[in-house]
Amino acid sequence: MESKRIEGLWDCAYCGNTGIKARYGECQQCGSPRGPETRFYLPDDLQGAVLTKEEAAKTTNEPDWMCSYCSTYNRSDATVCKGCGALKKEADGNYGTRHKLTGFSFWKK
Ligand SMILES: [Zn+2]
Ligand SMILES: [Zn+2]
Image 1 (cartoon, protein in one colour):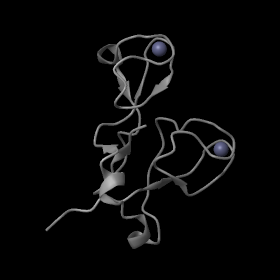
Image 2 (cartoon, protein in one colour; image 1 turned 180 degrees about the horizontal axis):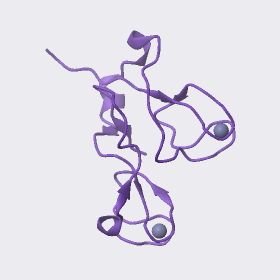
Image 3 (cartoon, protein in one colour; image 1 turned 180 degrees about the vertical axis):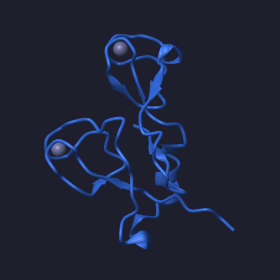
Image 4 (cartoon, helix red, strand yellow; image 1 turned 90 degrees about the vertical axis):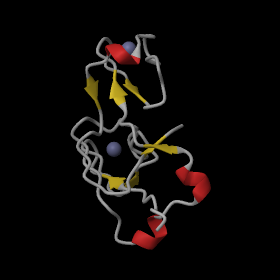
């Protein structure tokens, strides 16, 4: 059986915006990046959240990461920090590792 990838949702801890799609690394309302405490959850409409093949190809199972030097939030597919150029392998923390969703994957940009 083919496994489907489902896009989870998250809530902004800063402005209270809810139901932000996992593909967005920042709140669509206030622009705050989702932090390390962010927990993803499944939407009520599971069928509507199933990603197409094309969309699923843009996702990754690797969590996002935070630069140890400048605390910039980086996508999993970035090998160097977009803020200061430090290498990902020198980062000691990952964002989003607390998600508990089966079939959820992180969105690449
Ligand atoms: Zn917000
Ligand atoms: Zn950095």
